[in-house]
Amino acid sequence: MSEEIVSVQGLHHTYLPGTPLATIALCGTDLLVRRGEIAALIGPSGAGKSTLVHFLNGLLRPGARGQVIVFDQDTGAPECDLTALRQRVGLVFQYPHQQLFERYVGDDVAYGPRQLGLAREEVRERVRWAMDVAGLDFESFVDRHTFSLSGGEMRRAALAGVLAMRPELLVLDEATTGLDPRGRSEVHALLHHLREKAGMTILIVSNDMDEVAEQADQVTVLHEGRTVLAGEVHKVFAQRELLHRYGVVCPVAADIIYDLGERGLPVASGAITVAEAGEAIWQAMML
Amino acid sequence: MASYDALRHLTIGQYIPTGSLIHRLDPRAKLVALACLIAASVVASKYSNALLLLLLTIMLVKLSRLSLRSMLASLAPVMPVLLIMASLQLLFYGGVTRSGGPNRLLVDWGPLHISTASVRVIIITWARFATLFLLITLLTSTTTASALTRGLEGVLRPLNIIRVPGHEIAMVGAIALRFLPILGEQLEAILQAQASRGVSETRQSRWRFLANTRRMAQMVVPLFVDAYHRAEELILAMQARCYHGGRGRTYLVVSTPHVSDYLTVLVGVSLVALAGVLQYSILP
Image 1: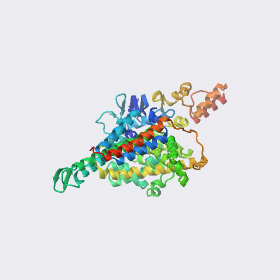
Image 2 (image 1 turned 120 degrees about the vertical axis):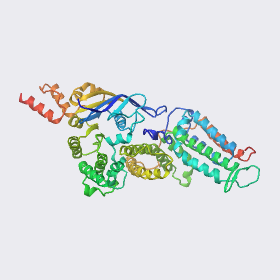
Image 3 (image 1 turned 30 degrees about the vertical axis):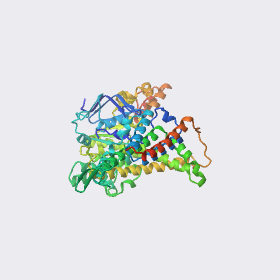
Image 4 (image 1 turned 180 degrees about the horizontal axis):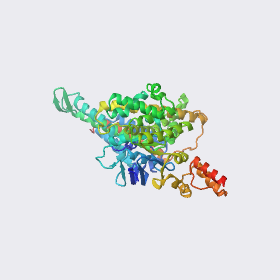
């Protein structure tokens, strides 16, 4: 088993404790992410996914109940160096326009590297790399006004801004929601590129089960602030009934295979992606 | 700022249901009484009436079963400004007269004069500020946005005769209030995103005015962009639902005032009178 870089255990969190507006967001959450994998965090709205993500780079810190260890640092400990942690954990949020704040795209992407105190040339190099990887042409976008970008371009700019920090763990909080299919598949290709070429570990938060089935190796299911299922993506999606009870639907491909099986076609179960389902149906037809 | 849910403590503009007597009052009565109390507080410039009003306001907060502590906690960000203002007043307000009487000079040191009048100005300013802040917070946390709109509209109705668009004014006010907590949450999201990109938080302090002002631009620009987006979406949503202002509009809730509502207004009016009387009384 490879190295665990995120280990969350028994985490509890309440927003606005001690007021009439107190809401329990997390109550007994566990999460494990190992180096080099693409992990996914799923669960219905209000399950606490975003709250959990905020713990990973110390935006929120654990109180009395629960432990969060990221890169061997206990974020609950007062001596934990959050600035250093945030360089290693890159968080991309759902709404790109909340993450951009400089006037020009180039400056915005350069913001993180400049905070690191890097030399001019190094900053420029990183900005060029990050924008290229995120799919924004450096020459034509570097001097554009940030808020004149389209929605999809803003999303890429926000991603580039985080990538320019060269994080070891990249966390995408519903970062493909609202993208068109092509933009989405570009982001997916990008994830694999970052894992293979830059050695990043990736955690995606998603409501799109097809995306999770296609991209992720490991998946963690949250329900009402608790971790209810976790493990290899095929094993988790095999538990149809349980997932259904927790308000999670299966990938479309898995549904089709299940339906065909119910109708008596002798398909092998366990397919969750389109390619796997196609193969299973082909095998069944050939019999 | 160790963790980023601090901004949610911004209680102003947030409705908090506790089901108290104040929550159940007619919004029109609340608005009229509030206007009276504010008028009284502005009139009051003596220890007796200013502190009396503050005390009454605190009693109202207790009556509403809201937490006085969390209301006051959201005042913390403006403390530096209040303190600086107070120290300037203390050092430079001076006294009009240097003789005895009601205004005694306490310290006379070169250009600086500290007198009983300057001390009084500070205490009254603080009491007035606290009173006004608590009153507004009390109104918004005990009244839903729609009740507030209805109330404001009801209060403005007599002005329809001179063609004052009461409904539209009320709607603008209600939307503005409703946006406050939303903007708070937006700001929080922006701060989180910036912290994630390496804004150092160890060097932040309320007292570093220059650095904070520079940081402000980085927060305000995305906040405004977002607010404009939201405003445009709101306009579309209102048009899609055929919003056309107040003319011919009927209401889901038609409130009829109860005895308690008349009493509230009566208490409000009598408080203005009391503050006025105290102002000219022999009390300090």
